[in-house]
Image (cartoon, one colour):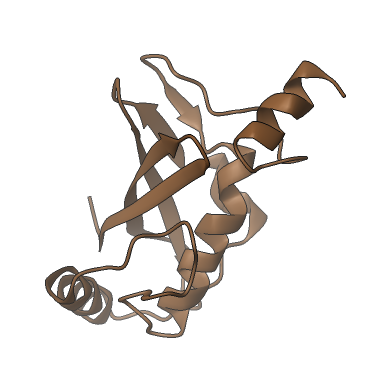
Length: 139
């Protein structure tokens, strides 16, 4: 077993690509997080804005935040779709010194890549990563 595989196994992401980078720059969203972001967006596409118990590593979304997300998506006036591979070309992660702030570009049936983005904080724990959804909005 290589050191990289050991690191991935340690964080519960075996075979998921290199670990996220901890530096001051904007980086692509880590490969190991992409399946979780796909699951989050799949829930949003189904209008499940609270994500209670849906995805083990994702914190439930408060009623207040879910209402804001619902309102922002409705006000945008387009239909969210699941993430295509192209989303990773423009989505970014930034190390804050304790966590990563991640902006994932969202896609719609009407436009393809939209102006909407998913804002999430990712926290590293001993057993893996925790995802906290902050908002879906147009920056």
